Structures are given as C-alpha cells and as structure tokens.
Amino acid sequence: MPFKVTIAGGITLKDSIESVSSRVETPNDSDAKSNYVGNVLEIVGRVGFGDPTIGLYQWSLLPSDDGQAYRNVEVEVIGEDLKTTRKVTFPNAFVADYSETYSSTSGRGTFSIYLKQKKDKNDVVTVSGI
Image (cartoon, rainbow, N blue to C red; front, top):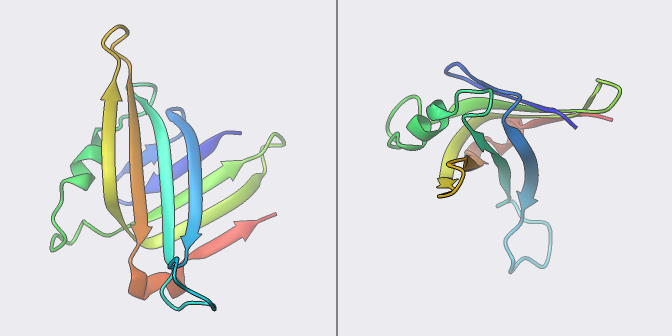
C-alpha cells in the first residue's frame, strides 16, 4: 500500500516511506479509560529514495520554544483501489525521536521518525477512512 505524508513546512513524502504505524497509548497502570492518552505516529523510510528527507532531520533539531516545533501532519494510507483506506491528521505534532541508520556496504540509509500529538490538543486529532 502506498502512503502519502504531508507535514507543514513544505515536507511531502510518498516514494521513500516503507511503513507507518499509528497508536493510541494509554498508561500501563490504568484500570479504566484514561484521560492521559498519547497519540503516536511512527514513520520509517529510506533516505535519498525519491523524496527529500533532510527536512525531517532539521525539524527534529528544533527546540520546543520554536514556533515551527509543532506542525500539522497528515498521513494517508492508499489502498490497492487507489482510495484512501485511512487518513490521520495530527494538527500539533512534534518530533519525539528521530534516527537515521546507514549501511557501510551499500551506503543506503533508513530513517525513523517518532511523532506525538501535543497532549492537550488530542481532541483535534482526526481519523477517517473505511
């Protein structure tokens, strides 16, 4: 399934994405529905494969008091029929973790970006699809 990730600030990823994971995390010590859930997106892809990914690294370096640290992120999962299976939007996402790994034999790189929605803005996360 192809993916399309659009991040405010001019970052669009289509060809480089290998996998996307979205999760709603509840604290492990909860015995009932918790108000302290976390919305998480993890995107794994290839560096230098069709999409410029340097913007991801640059975004990850921004301090929390920078106005660009929180960005709108939209992830679309596109099915075989070219219809959107799932669309998830985090209006106030920030980079919780970013890494790049390179092979010494091929020089190929892989990136992994771990995004979270600002916790006090969980009510504006949208999910749609089939």
